[in-house]
Length: 74
Image 1 (cartoon, rainbow, N blue to C red):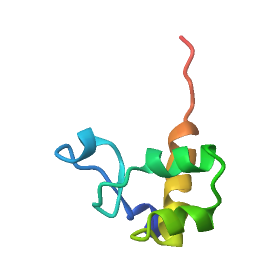
Image 2: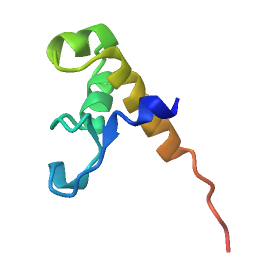
Image 3: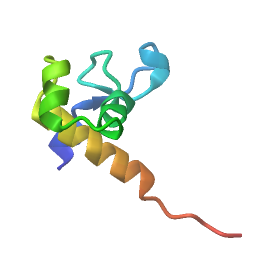
């Protein structure tokens, strides 16, 4: 799983420091937005030919891990 997350890069000089895929200007949020719009993984790969299926898996894994954090109550 950690190899998958190595596909996600964060560069403060690219896309405002938002997480991108393999240093390209395709953001994790772009992939998530396409899923939210109803596209399938195959359609996303067709629309963004530079992506690979593991990039999609990495995007979903990254998003899931970012959302799964404890909330501390004071």
